[in-house]
Image (cartoon, rainbow, N blue to C red; front, side, top):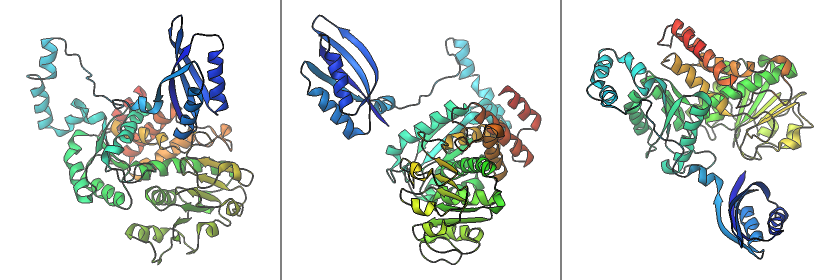
Length: 473
């Protein structure tokens, strides 16, 4: 999870490189590439890529190398910082500007004809500007990753990262918009004002419960898709994984009991989405325990709405208590939210999605003997629940048909498309969700989302056009 480059000047003698690598190994470091930069009669300059556990461990490795005689540490470079140097995205022209003729068409006077075409029919903006393929990734920096309320500047690297995920996985252009306000009305006003530039709005890392109101009001005000990925991207991928998990354990959505820890954006959206998908017995738990209709402690309007369609038996108590006899546990909370002992009390062939990252709610290796299927939010365990399986394809599908919104039918279509990427004969306990690098995912999700948009009459393009786009993809 942490790697760095160590620049070394080593005396040009046989055996000294071996001493360096031994010192790194004895300090617990892993060695990647070793590059030779310079050789003279008296010295050798090398760069070594070293894998460490964290920054403290990296310093311990550097200290071990510095202790060697005839070895001089020239520099230490954090590889992650190097990737981010200068930012991760640029704006690049799609058209050549090498002649006066090209300039006259791309800009004045030729561009005036395009302006007039759009002024006469606003729909032309999708065809003759970036709007048809550009997403705004909007945040206020109030709930960034697990770092909390760190502000818009500190959130920018994450939003840049989101933009490159859109491009790399979905070939969708995206631009980060980090707002220096956390006032709900002001955020809504700003996004409404910049909306003409974009074909969709991806809300990101905005704290609950404000994120619910912001998304709802923007969806109502704008005629382009507004999608809060922390809510709906998470819910879509969780449902996709659950669809395939239930195929393996032989259970039906309508028959299972699902316990969710975490009643923030991801937890509440997942509960609602599973309810839409046919799960009848869902119990959400927060720090005060199970949420039920009539509960007074630690409630707000959105939890009250959640309570109306969840926990039908009004079970009360901690998540550990509620887990007894449950078929599915979904953790979108924090380490220690449930215990291994209570996981053991779940129903036969239990399914556990322990998704807190980097440290799951319960250690996966400790529960493998007691449950049938385990998924996490990490890439170093099987069955990674990762939003990148959802949002690039969902927005690509919405943009392809110029959708006015992303509705429940489109999200359900995306979940089933992700699940169906894996043929039933290939499903197994350790393979219920496709890899984020599976190129079929975005294509299938985009096609399914476009079809659902057309069927629910939120697409501006006629279906014939959508079909042509699908074939081109």
